[in-house]
Amino acid sequence: MTLLEIRDLKVSYGEREVVHGVNLSVGAGCRTALVGESGSGKSVTARAVLQLDVAASLSGSVSLKGQELVGAKASELRSVRGSRVGLVFQDPLTSLNPVMTIGWQIMQPLVIRGVKKKEARERGIALLARLGVKDASRRFDDYPHQFSGGMRQRVVIAIAVIAEPELLIADEPTTALDVRVQAQVLDLLHEVAVERGMAVLLITHDLGVVAGFADDVVVMRHGRIVETAPVAQLFADPQHPYTKGLLGAVPRLDRDPAQRLVSVEEIEAVAG
Ligand SMILES: Nc1ncnc2c1ncn2[C@@H]1O[C@H](COP(=O)(O)OP(=O)(O)OP(=O)(O)O)[C@@H](O)[C@H]1O
Image (tube, rainbow, N blue to C red; front, side, top):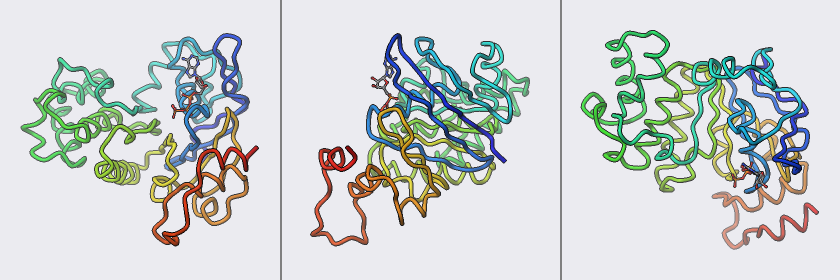
């Protein structure tokens, strides 16, 4: 069953159209990666789902289980945000409130939906522990500055998923983190998504992280989708020259180390 269906989405800032008719779907419980280089329009597309950007004008259709979101009332979008669609962005520091404890912030999505504080706290602590934060019940009352970057991003993920959304939009969730921590956080996100049957739209410029995470991959370039395929098929038999170029730039353990990486300029030259 299709959960999120984006059809002919166009996004403009003033006179400048930056997304030119995108079609993309995410199945219920499925993980879809939207990949492409910087500036290709991935974030603009992701933000358009919940119309987070007031400066952007949109046309086309974004439907969440049949509910049309383009042109929906602000109150309708507010109720979708957080409860049916969770959001995780690149920089955990800007997503967290520095003057509130992380526990308070994790509990909020439940408390505003009427869950009693005691239960919200228990569920928050259990989730934080599930996300690999040691000594979660004591750390629950700490402030964001008392956490490392990787731990903060686990807190952001906890806030995004505690109300059990059907879809999580994660925009470069690990890019700001230490390389060593990136894989741990993505693995956790994958596990939690599978456990909860939650669909994920993962935005990334890094095809290297996609193989172990996504079911389907959508490749975007210059505001357009150039290729959509199940992950194994995309890696085994990429169709578009741009995808081939992107794959050529992914370091692979199974490849001859003497084989050099492809530069962005070469990708541009091949893709035209
Ligand atoms: N608020 C804005 N106002 C005007 N133009 C914008 C705005 N946000 C994004 N753009 C433009 O839209 C285009 C696509 O940007 P977008 O952020 O979606 O790219 P991206 O693929 O997510 O890249 P990155 O990984 O660098 O974020 C870019 O040309 C960018 O300059």
